[in-house]
Image 1: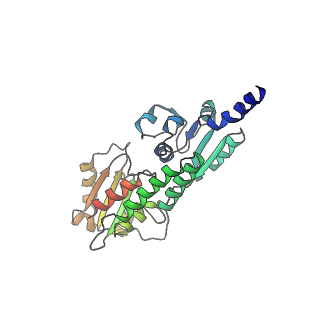
Image 2: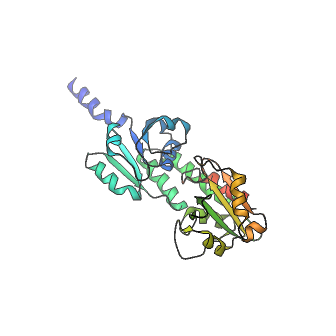
Image 3: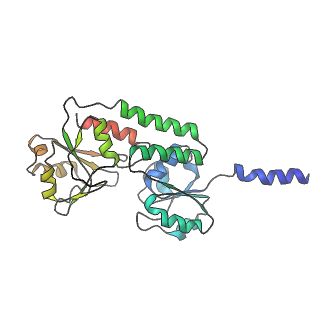
Length: 267
């Protein structure tokens, strides 16, 4: 009998449910996409999808993460991004298992899905999510004649203060390439440069895409009107477009939808 009890004690950890804390909306989406949404006990601020996660405990945002709130949820696994490594290392001191992900390029996203799938033992599901991204990229509608596109993904209504645009080494530029377009931002600066009105005019894009996420409350027509007043080719040709939904800014498996949405928008 004692051997049976000992065996059960050894096996229990193998079948115990994870208690997962996700430190970004994208990570919450990846974990949920792998079938582990019910095991997410806490999320970062601004996590909107799946909708059920909006009711989970919030542990803070980009620069306001709280160790106390994380620890209060007694997590077995905390998953964060590269810029959160210091925070994760503090959690490791409490004996909490952590995982660091990078989500800047499409390859980063696919690799992160694969990593989390392995950690959570959902390799087959992870492969399906990755395949959906690859298929979307391969089947994306391509421009017959390439033109330059400026992607604005933050502060789109704050022209006087500066807007964030897609630079290089970021998944938005890869999406433009999949669509057969070029990035209107050509200066040698990676990731997320900030442009003022002068800088925007200097790029003189053929097309402007203003991306609004699920929390943005800007009125698309009013936003377009601001940009239509600029002396750029996109305004003269009526190619200022607003895309607003809850996935367009999130580097998760739903980038498959983002690829299709952006490529269709610039046709």
